[in-house]
Amino acid sequence: MSNLNLAIIGNGSIGLLVNGRGEIVWGCYPSFDGDALFCSLLQNDGGETGLWAVDMLDLDRVEQHYLTNTAVVVTRLCDQHGGIVEITDLVPRFHQFGRVFCPMSVVRRIRRIAGSPRIAVRLRMRCDWGDGRPQVSCGSNHIRYVAPGVTLRLTTDASITAVLQESSFFLNDDITFILGPDETLPASPRDTGNHYEAETIEYWQSWVRGLAIPFEWQEAVIRAAITLKLNTCEDTGAIIAALTTSIPEAAGGERNWDYRYCWLRDAYFTVNALNRLGTTQTMENYLNYIINVAAGAPDGRLQPVYRIDGQPALEERIVSGLDGYRGMGPVRVGNLAYIQVQNDVYGSAVLAATHLFFDRRIQPPQSVALFYRLEHLGEMAQRVFDQPDAGLWELRGTSRIHTFSSVMCWVAADRLAKIAVHLGLADRAGYWRNHADRMHAEIVARAWDAGRGVFSSVFDGEGMDASLLLLPELHFISPHDPRFLQTMAAVERELRRGDYIYRYSEADDFGVPENAFLVCTFWFIDALAVTGRVEEARRLFKNMIARRNSHGLLAEHIDPQTGELWGNFVQTYSMVGLINSAQKLSLPWEKAF
Image (tube, rainbow, N blue to C red; front, side, top):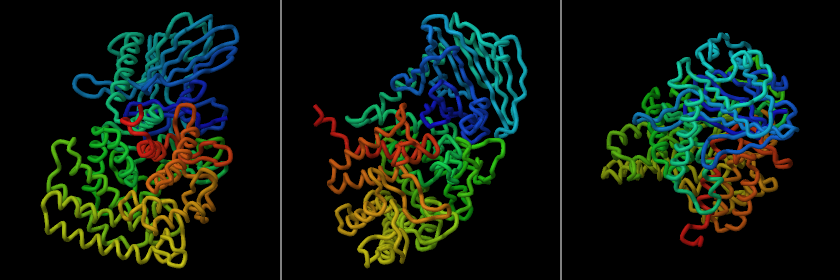
């Protein structure tokens, strides 16, 4: 049965998931939001199709781990007779000819470690979202797979016949498989594989050495940082919400969406985490993506989500060729959220772009011209801050004036005022400060529920949701303001279930949420930390660290009763939450010894 104890490998061009048996069970081509050629994660056929497996006769046990500080996964298959095989999986990424070399290639190296292991290789790709199979042809040392929109070549020094027929053989020597573009390799599979493996290991370990990590929980933060990098499109700078589509938020539920796209809402949280880690290049590329998307928005109106190439159309459809995770359909491709009105996106874009003006590591410093472009987003923000929308939780059946969306619109005006001061534009600073003050006053007046003594999730209403925990983080209110402390207490009282925080507790289009949204718990941990409840925050954070899968990764949701991970995987939001909380809670380096 499928589960989310998966490892992610990738290089910024493609990303794949490897299960605990060393099977590649998920991977889209030719990009993150392409067709799922490896799709057994969403098949209910016992792993018969849409995967790349190495089967061992008389398998006894399996061991698996990442090579330290890399995105390289090693799986050991051990049989009942002392035979041991080691599979090394990686997607090449390293510096070459003055640029980052990140081809659409997967390297699988299979080494005999002990005994006389007998294995079989099953490479069973699908296409057209499970409805079709690639056309297969072969040469003397390769197999070609032709699918709509992509042609892949498997080059190997193993027997082509054994691979095509999936016949078993004794592994007497190391063998290498390179699945990539339909091109001839520059050297033998063994030599190319050796080169790709060594250079990729060196790349990741060198990249990690440049991270600004906290003293505590270093392993967890490093793994989260690598994962953010793996969810980033090298070509455009977009960061996807998750690698998968249609992993349900809870068993048997219909909340299964396609997350293989870039949400502008994630901009602030992701950029903030990257900034704290010191990964300025990834941060700059992401900010350039956001700025280019904003520049192309008609009439300055932003969508909440875009394709990784910045294109706006994300038509949602249900595909019939895949059963769904553990048979829990439907499987969706595309996301209708792109047509929703979500007014927080203007603040998200401005807030993220603010780094370009104040971070001295970014060269050249941004100019007045960018500020004037951002003002168009600010004008939209002050125009819609008191208008109904779908909110950050993307409600499909209702539209209300959501406090978080309004606060994010205020953020746009507030940060534009600060940027204008920084640039010496006194008249524009006054203009945006006046707008920010006016918006702030109205938000407080209409979002404050005097009867309960708390901020409400909607204007003139009584709702409660976890996004209110972000008010101090956004500098809308002091963490020590009694109004926030009372709101935080209400969130804890109404949305806390054990050690987890739910996003909200009211019924929505699909009923009452069954599982906890992981990033909301990180938000609560951060709120505990800034309000002085540090020991409680540390205890909850340690619990969250323990809830990661065996590779240190998190999905979107968790079942509070069983601890099982649910929702799309790997979830960028969750890994960002981990990084931010670790940075807040860790002992400083100067006090650690």
